[in-house]
Length: 197
Image 1 (cartoon, rainbow, N blue to C red):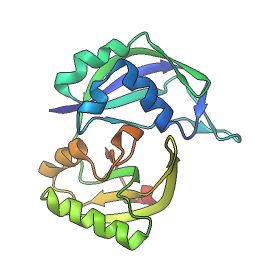
Image 2 (cartoon, helix red, strand yellow; image 1 turned 90 degrees about the vertical axis):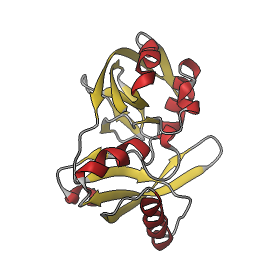
Image 3 (cartoon, rainbow, N blue to C red; image 1 turned 60 degrees about the horizontal axis):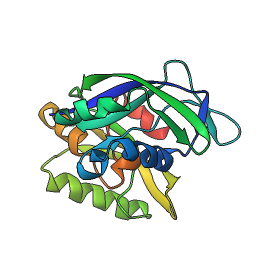
């Protein structure tokens, strides 16, 4: 069984493109992030500022998607302080949250290795077929994130008309690459309108 482990965090601001720095810091304390194939790190949400930064609200969260068996290990992050390219975050307590079954799922960035939209859609169709899931999907905007020495490109992706018995599977395994950087992690969504955002 896979869960989202939701940590409270304290900090004022972080880089908007923080996926690589966050993974680099967390793996120091939690090596299983590298060894668990389906482990993922959600991007931290905040309000965009004018200088490529995100301003964090008091309710900002750090969310890890992990096998339930790893929750105890991950609790060791509580009380840690991490540095995201000069922005300090204090990690607080955590609570596990189950993955609910929704017919509409959304990921802000899915990376398959294909820059071209048609090739990307072909990759998505092939990966869905490989895991035995039949659903409709809509491609959103192309986005990019910075890794250590490269830029990773992909697209926002909405999956809809997902059978409820397959919804949890899709959230567990995701699609594409770079889950440690926040890519290919799906969350339930109430409307397909979010794909245009």
